[in-house]
Image 1 (cartoon, one colour):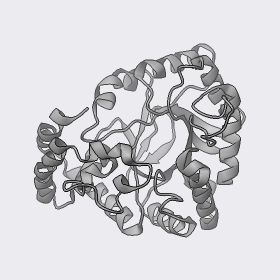
Image 2 (cartoon, rainbow, N blue to C red):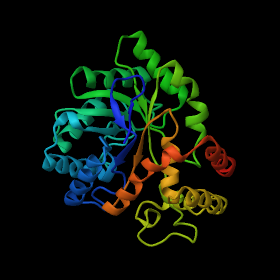
Image 3 (tube, rainbow, N blue to C red):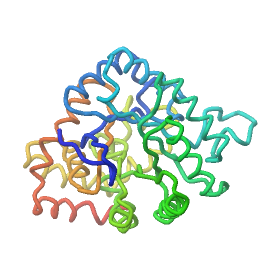
Length: 326
């Protein structure tokens, strides 16, 4: 496992990391999480991603209890959470969901700390942007989390380049803690934001990336070529919004060509896809997901594939995937 700096910070994150979206609490209990976290750490993974909204806070509880049981030294691991949607989706308070105002953020961090059983969280993100709240208010609240010792670094997730730059400039002018990282979707079929929109931010402000969905929610495993199989992510309750993308005929057809390359390299389609994402030098870490040990170990095999992605192989992959990418 290789380690990379998170943007221009001094924090070293593993090139692959492990996330909890969909799986924790829904498919993975504390015992299973503890086992998978141990396997991941043994393989060199040191970053574990979470969010307040995942399983309505229960994902944070599962991860927190699993980490507590493992008794790791706090310096050995990095955890994250993200804020925006809140927990009470049916609540009446206007300040409890879909916001990044100061009141919500300063209470949200306390809730996550309690659920995870930690004194501080390493990385905190604004899970989406909030056009209803002045960016300066959000920047000051996120900066204060760090000043109060409740978080170490803050960043954004799925913000536009203009929004990130504005937040960074506000922090610069007011001597506040600046956003260090962005968490965008990035995979063979979702590329333009990372490769084009953010291009100037890498050099101008040293933006780091903790990318999610390297397998395009499972599309790049190839298992959706004949429809949505039972037990897959696309078949889970609440995941119906993924089905259209997962069953896209043109992209599923392209997988056959990508599989030829994977076979030549001695790996699976999913390992090829994860390795391709990690091959981008702008990516600090690729967040992977797994619902069991076997799947986790298989994904970890991508580390051995990345060095095989020569410029020639990358060109062949681009010829197949780039015309279908958004």
